[in-house]
Image (cartoon, rainbow, N blue to C red):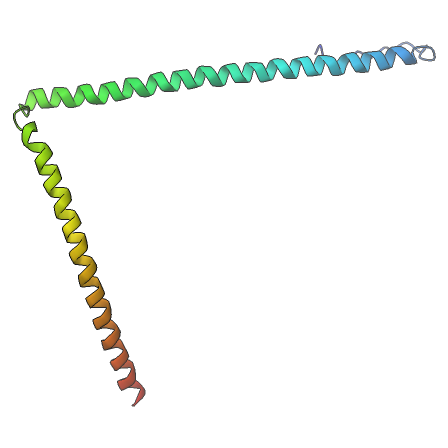
Length: 127
């Protein structure tokens, strides 16, 4: 590995103290450079992946719309699409009306159940 210092097998280490400090500093600088290169590489990979994901998603969306258009053309539904918008509007209004009715009904059912359960509890406590 280029970032690790080499070990000398020589026994004349007495006058090489300054060289050891220099090699440690050089190794740290090499490590910092390698770390920066790794980070730059990681950022580049992330950018490439983001571009690939965006391209893939756009292709999927195009494929979905093309499939729907082909299904409409094959089944001959182009004439019926005119009636589809009012139909969906009416269905959403129906769902909202049912929701309001159910909210009122649920309030009545809750009040009825509270009254029944309270009277049942009082009746059973008298036994």
